[in-house]
Image (tube, rainbow, N blue to C red):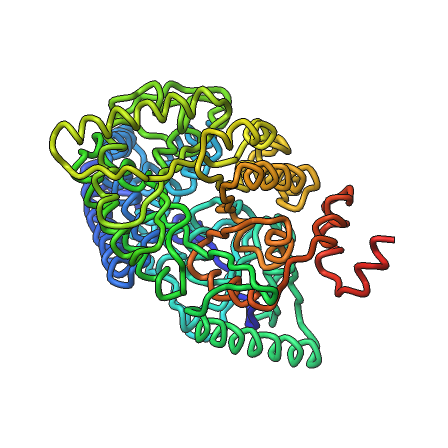
Amino acid sequence: MAIGTVKMLSAKNESELLNYVQGAAEEEATKYHLAHAAALQEVAEVVAEATRKAWREQAEIMEAHQSILSDPILAENILAKIEQGAAAPAAVRAATEEIADLFAGLENAYLRERAGDVRDVGSRIVRVLLGGQSQRFDDSGTILCAGELPPSVVATLPSDKVAGLILGQGSLTSHAVIMAKARGLPTLVGLGEQIQQLEDGAPVILDATHGLLIINPTAEQLAAYGHKIAEERDKQAQYRSLAQLPATTRDGKKVVVAANIGQPEEIDAAVEHGCEGVGLLRTEFIFMGRDSMPSEEEQFRAYKYVIERCQGQLCVIRTLDIGGDKPLPYLNIAKEDNPFLGWRAIRISLKRTDIFRTQLRAILRAAAFGKTAIMLPMIVSVSEIVQAKALLAQAKAELAAEGGPVPTDIPLGIMVETPAAAVMAVEFAKECDFFSIGTNDLVQYTLAADRGNHSVSYLFDHFHPAVLRLIAMTVRAAHASKIWVGVCGEMAGDPLATELLISLGVDELSMGAPAIPIIKDLIRHAQLDDALARDILRLDSVERVREYLSKDKGAKQKLKS
C-alpha cells in the first residue's frame, strides 16, 4: 500500500526527435558510437550499485542489458541502417524494434517478456543521442505511471522518492515487475487504457494487495490508509523481532518453516528471517548465464556453501529443473510448441546422464558438510524415480571407489507438481523419503493455465478446489507411508493458506525469506483444525474457498450451511 501523487512517464522523446538535425552518414555513425559508449557506462553503474546493495535480480537483469548492448549483430544492423541514410536515433529504434518483434512473436512466455528488455536498451541509446537525462524525482511519495516501465528505470528508482508503480501493460513475470517486487514497491499491473484517466500530480492511494487505486481520495480515506500503512509497518517490525522462535501450533504440532533459495548468497538473508533450513535450493543458478556446463567442482563449492550455512538443519537440493521457461542455450534444446509440456527437468536429466551424474556427485560430496536431501523435479512415473535412484547409486559407487566420503543416508524425494504425481502419490511414496508440493506448476498443469500468460491469469489460483483436493490426496498418501510432505510453491508463503495447509497435514512450508517471519507467527497462533480441512474440501469454487478462509469462525459456520 502507498499514498502519493502521480507522475506520468513517457520514454518516446517525440519532441526531441522532431528537432533532431541529421548529419552525414559518417557523422551519424560517430554519434551512435558515442551514445552507445555512454549507455554502456550508465548500465555498468546500475549493475555496480545493484551488486553493492545485494539486489541480485536487478543486477542480473541489467547484466542482460549489458549483453544486449554488446551484441555485435545489433551494432551491425544499426550502422547498416545509418549507411543506408537513416538518422542515428531512427536507426537504433528500427534495429531494436526488429529484434524485439522476433522475441515478441515467440510462444515461450519468458522469452516474449525479453522483447521489453531489447526495447529498453534501444530507448536508452536514443535518449542519450537526443541529449536526454535520466528521470529525476524531486518529491517523496511519487507514484509512477506508465504504459510499460523499462526494467532499467525500475532499477534506478530512488527508494526515498518513489512509493509505488502503476503500469498499463506487462505481466507479473515481466522483469520490471520482478524488480519492483524485489524493491518492495507496491505495483498495479495491466490497467490498460485506464491509465490515460490519470493526470500528473493527482493524489492517489495505491492498494496493490487488493488491486485498488483510489484517485483523489477523501480525507477519511487518506486517514484510514495512513493508519493501515503505519500498522503494517509496525507488524512487520514485530514479526521480525520474533522470527527466530520456532513455529509450533497452539496444540503442539511443530511445522518446519524453511527457505526457497535461488542463489547461494540468499541463505544469509533467509537465516536472518528465521528459516529452519532450506526447503528448496534451485540449482539452475549455476547452469544459467554462461556458455558451458559448470564443472563438478564448481557445483560442489556452491552446494557446500549453502549446506554449511544451514547450521545442521536440512538443505533440500532440487536437481536441475531446466527447460520450460528456463532455456539453457548450450544444451541446444530444439524449439518446442509447448515447452512446459516438453523436454524439461528430470526428463533432461535422465537423457543427459552425464550432466545428471556430475550433479549427483557434487551434491553427494557437499552432503558431507551438513544435513542434505535430494529432490527430483517434474516426476510423472515410478520408473523415473527408479532410474534416478540407479544413477544416484552409481554416483555413490564412483565416489566410494575414489576413496571419498559418501553419505549413506541421504534422503531422496520428489516434487509433486503434476496431477499425475498427486494421483500416483501412493505408489510414489514407496520409492521416496519425502514429498514437496510445488503449487505453482501444480496449479498450472491442473487448470491448464500458463502461469506466465496474463490473458489466463484469472484462472491461476492455488485455492481452486481441484488443486486443494490433489494436495490433500498427496498428504494422505505420504503419511500412510510415514514420509513427510512439504509445500514449496507460492502457496506456502500465502498467509491466507497457512491454517488450511497445516490442517491438511502439511509438515513443512518453504518460501521466500521475507514471508518467513509472518508465516511462523501465524503458525504459532493457529491450531490443527480437521473441521476446517473437511469444510474446505467440500466447497466447489475458488470464490467460496477464499470467502470461507477470510471469515471468522462464526461466519464460517453460516457459510458452510
